[in-house]
Image 1 (cartoon, rainbow, N blue to C red):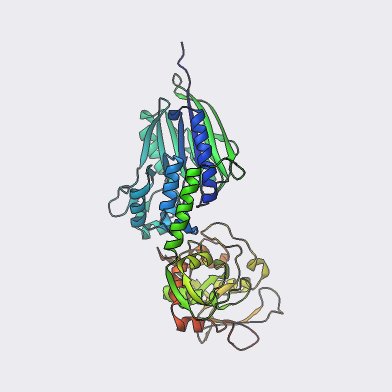
Image 2 (tube, rainbow, N blue to C red; image 1 turned 30 degrees about the horizontal axis):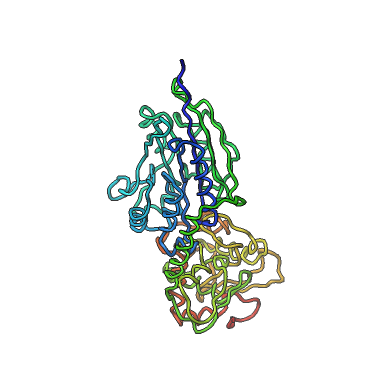
Length: 486
């Protein structure tokens, strides 16, 4: 007589990005599934980027709000996403995880540079028993190596890490699950190239797979972004054949779900109040309002560009106005208000850029198609690209001329821009990835400056009265000499 099939339910989320408004519904749904199935047949996983520092509850609690809400929801493991790994320092992450997480963090391709070992608050892999099955879990994150090295981590090739750990785990487990914060293309490559992987739970590129993809015997699943969906997989394993013989998966909409977990709702209110108190810390007292314009030059945009130039010790400062969401009123400025107007986890950086590439970006910045361009990913948390805000430059334009011919002259300090020369430019990491202005991604000798964000740079400038005064002087003039802007 054949052995009965062993059944398992996998519940999964990814890329929540601190959209806490969906967590009461997600928790209620997970609880309902646990009531319908035996407790040891349900496995609950998160595939990274649960934390996002644009959200006050996350910023004001250093991520502990996320972990406590995940505890209440019953997660059993998560893989670290780039929003966890790159927007918090390792020291801060270690502290908050050790104090608050009641589930393991998996980092199969992360080691400390100093020790060449997995950080002591992570696991390289996890083996867990469910439904009589031994399940091996591997968790890999996208290898933004230049960034991670600055933080003291070495992030190895994720595909190679999965290959290595799959070989080690395969003889000892019945099922191998890869929690992959790599993106859909990498997941497809992994399925096609590597042996021994049963299920890949994906994230990072915010893709929704309404039903699993089956590639080379591996199932690939993903549940979109922001808690709009929860992933639900039901599988049957045949112990005689030692393989999955049936797998059905779907994504369950959460945005219209009526059932909520009141305990999670209560936690959210607690952390809303706690974070508001933490973010009420004063940053500066402003003697005058600072205007912002996404589609033209403004003092607040100039102030940020000047701050980035000084922070990076560069000749020129460049940033897009869309990084800032609103202007500032006079009076008391708090951390919370600064977070509201500059929410993106964007880092300053320094690079060498040719005069020709700089001129191209400046010309593009004058065009409506660039000003109104929506940006997705790369840490951007605004609505449109906006114009380029500059410092260290004077740009003379003629708005009546054809596109890409509107700049009459550019001066770096008192010297005309030399198209063949490389300039030291202070700017933002987003531009180096080709987002916004392609020519700015051609910079050389890029140095990323972590862990500070551009809102930390802006905070320093807002305490400097001379910097605020200088922000009112025009960098762009249309056939007129420089003047004060209000």
